[in-house]
Structure formats: structure tokens, C-alpha cells
Image (cartoon, rainbow, N blue to C red):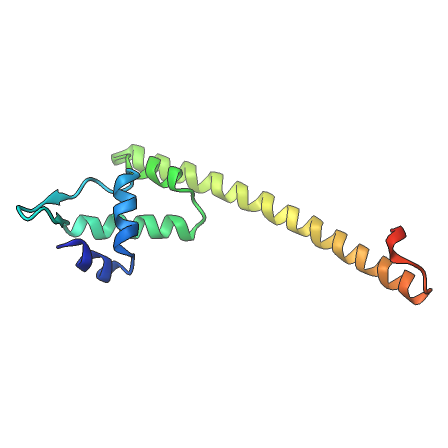
Length: 123
């Protein structure tokens, strides 16, 4: 299939597909005699993997590293990356909990100083 059809079927812009190819996330497409890129069904699967990886918050570099693997190395790489992403999310969640607590504390202090008709800038 040509890049336009692949773009339409995958919902990914042709420019993004060309970028993924240039960035090493997609294998180089075969070229027809007319010079147009020609993709097989494997390209759809690879684009799906890239989309899922991005939706889960993985960097393009992490996705590139995983799609380069095969066999048991692919499984191990996926599991390692998923575990690392879970750790990242846990840290982000803890940071958000702490920020939320700080915001609530600040809000209460500002409200209290406002009710006393004091300047909240002294917090």
C-alpha cells in the first residue's frame, strides 16, 4: 500500500509516518518503480505499536529500542520498559500528592489571612 493509504488506515499523518521512518522507528519502505513508498501489513502493526507506546507515555527513543528487539529479548525489553514506566508514574503521582497538599495548605493560609484582612504576601 502507498503511504496515503497507510496514513488513512492508521489514522497517522503521512508526514508522521515519514518521520518515524527517518527516525528509525519504521523500517525503510520499499520503493516502487514510480519511486513511491510501498508498505506491507507489517507497517500497520508497527504503527500500532508506536501509537500504543506513545499513549502510554514512552519516549520515541524507548519505543525505537523496543521495536528493534526480537524473540525473548523483545519480551524482556517490553517488561523492563513497562516496569520502568510504572516507577516513573509512581514518582509523578507522589509528586502530585505532595503538590496537592502544599496547594491546600497555601489555600488555607491565604483564606485565613484574608479573613483577618492581612496581606497574604507574608506567607
